[in-house]
Image (cartoon, rainbow, N blue to C red; front, side):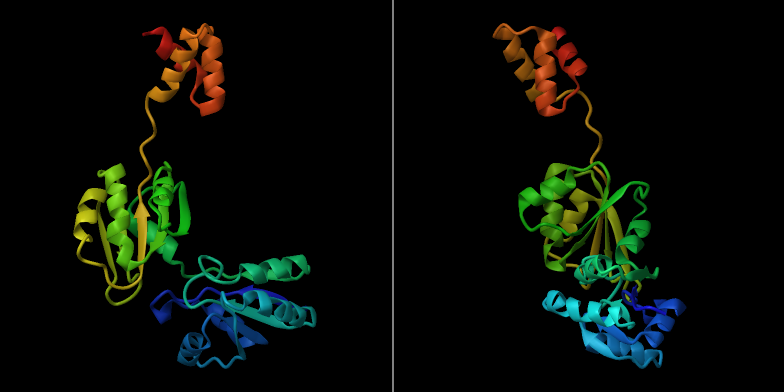
Length: 268
């Protein structure tokens, strides 16, 4: 069989969550590219798997990728794992997958554990439309941009910053539903659900322990018309422009519906 890459998700906490297909792939691979050889070694030892491990992490992936691609061109099967969960999802692996695709090599992705998906389901928030943003931005402007979306947001966050990030959300909309999911699949797993205001107060002085995933309900859909856009139309009309023309111009600039802008100006 020709060389190929097998992307293997690993447990996010409970080692029993490894799948039989992943164990088989790790046993059969010529080389296992892993984020931390010591951590992967613990997993392999647990299941009696002997494998050739090479470090592959964010600090060496660009240098390591050409060598791994060359091995696969020569017929080797490479298994890619991260410390926990699905590689590439806030973990190394993107450069290697890109390299394989560019070289015409097969990339096989096995299903398995994902902290983002587990948290989304546990949150009891809408899961039909959602967005994963990795780690939340540190700056307030970046947080406000993330929190402005109408879809459910799933994000990783440092325990030290949970209180501060939720405080920003509470200022924007204190009633927004939130789930703070920590230590998923582990002994002390906890899912705390509530509104942004109450959870911001809870974690203001009490940092959650362990790894945290935040799930945030989407912003309520906007109702009515942006007053700033209406004011812009009104100013154009006062300067001599026709109301419909002014509404059309402002609509193109702001994205506000032209008919709604025209009606708002006509009614006043």
